[in-house]
Image (cartoon, rainbow, N blue to C red; front, side):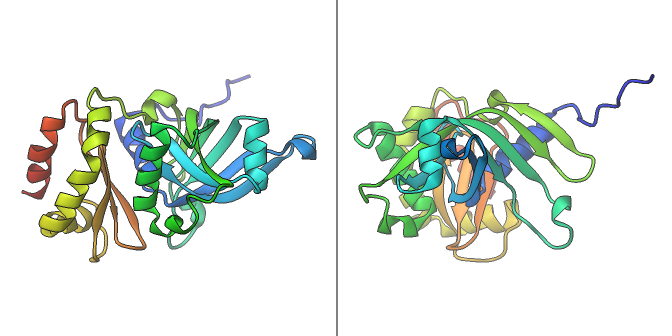
Amino acid sequence: MSEKSNVLRETDDDARKLARTLLRSAKSGSLAAIEPESGGFPFVSRVLIGIDIDGAPVVLVSRLATHTQALLADRRASLLTGELGKGDPLAHPRLTVQCEAEEVPRDSEVHDRIRARFVRRHPKAKLYVDFPDFGFFRLNPVRASLNGGFGRAYTLTADDLAITSAAAADLAEMEDSAIEHMNADHTDAVNHYATVLCRAPVGDWKIVGIDAAGLDLFDGERLKRLEFEAPLQETAELRPLLKKLYG
């Protein structure tokens, strides 16, 4: 009997870049958790997605919600991202990330960083982010499955999705000021990043996130991710890279 053919392709740099872009450009996604009171049935809900400086997805949820109680009881979860487009929805790329949920303490520096990054990405979350029943969970990736369209399936590791850089913490500290400067003084460059490099429609584009691996761009409705060719390893590399991308 012949061996069953392997439908998976070898994971290459293009697949890794597509997976990272699908995750980091997602405004929302479908979160599947295990509901303990159901006898182990999965419970799926739609959540807003943020991204921490190391590439881990983040969700803001209420303790009153079923999915929050499920995550507190069992850390295992899966997150599906990928925007639908015209035509057959199965022809468009999507990414499933299997994760372990980690509640973020409200009185921690990590919470302050995640809150700032999340609110820039989702401005309307300012209305409820500080309600006492709301809190953040990091969804630490364990493995992932990428479907890039018909006949393009890949498996990825946590390392494939991670942002690894010695400059990560320093970039996080300067992120607010760098974003404010770029949005105030370099609007032409910001719009170039979105409309030319990300091929987005013309709009009032703003930078809402800077990390070692790329930029998050938002026009009030659409979110785009511009991935750098390689993660920055020093903060001093940021300014010349941004100039080069505009040039």
